[in-house]
Image (tube, rainbow, N blue to C red):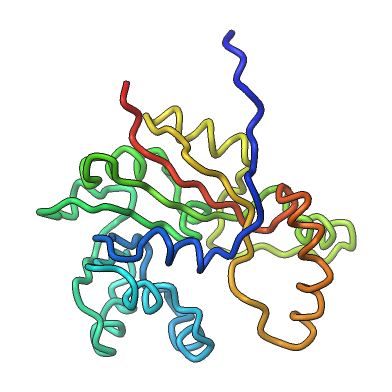
Length: 223
């Protein structure tokens, strides 16, 4: 059995700022682009990821399984939208390749994550990157809620990942992990959230494995 070096989370970052940095000036495919029922709320709060990416990517395409949400996005002026399943990207019939494929908080929703990783490969340019964010199984706030008996789960979530299982998943499907970060999903909104964020940030910076979100940046392996 081959021993692997311990998985290291580099630091604690903003999910939004990291995605913007990686996608800026690049040709981007955004998987799970619609945010479903939360579009209006996220637009109002300035946290709708597809809207943010639209202002930074050189070219932005989106794919989502929810036709109703895609129609709503189209009515709001978004273009290059594709109806399709992230687990079957080969069926989406893209006639181009991308510098970056982003799947923000999508992995925990899908039944066959390996299928998404496999069918994403032909859509990446040489040296292109697949960037995902997902819930962290070791996130401190999840654990505290469990200890207090107040934990609930999103009805569409089917899996939680640890840093180690994410790296194993990507390696199994022919990717090399370039970076692994702990992250916060959106900037704090309410005064109470801002206070908690200010108090908690030094802890998460020192121990990013406790962050609620993980970000993986990966490339297709050369071998």
